[in-house]
Image (tube, rainbow, N blue to C red):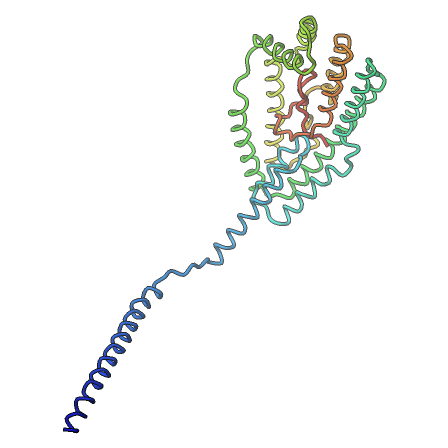
Length: 341
């Protein structure tokens, strides 16, 4: 009987042990199955890799974009700026990039002797004259001489820079640069400058300028008529005249680009001027208009004109390609003065 009792005790314990073993085996099998199932998934996951050549191309592209952006931020000198700025977007070697930057740095080596500095002095003298109710003609004549002298010296530096740029590039690079600039200018011209109106648009031009001056100087009806008559005398700013200036500027740019693509090349034999007239022409027209305005305006309005002229003189210079190489916008509007070093 004791033996039977022992069997009954041992038997349940054995069953429990067997069940535990079965559960352990099942769990182990499940674990193994899960690991086995996950192993192929892990081994089949793609591993990102970049070939050395692709990485080098990406780095070169980033470097080119950064250099082009640097060129866009710089101010570029006169007519030569068309080629100098375009070169920043060309495929250049590191040595060529260094040469380009050195050339532009040299153009502005003496900022106090630049045309921009001479123009600033001119504006200062005009402002002084406005507040004194009379412009000092002797000072203005000296200003015109200084503007012309500084502009001529600037154009000589531009010619040297263009000659050095031509020498730094090979024939294929020069042609690619010229083609790139022509395409960009054609797109800009089509977008920004549709065909201009004929002389029939002149009255609208005068009306627009009078409206602006009326707003800025608070002109009364009688003054508006006087200013209208004054502006009508200046035929250099009619739509047809402005189109003629653009056409002449375009011809100078085309001549420069054609010559630059060829070999040999000498920029000193080209016309690098910004206008067919003297460099100080825009300044002289501004002074003449301002002098006439002094007899029309009241004292408080003259002060407004002085502040307006100061603003014009302190305005940051613009790149030539932003204004199509036109020397100035005339006395009745903000002058479109390009960067003149």
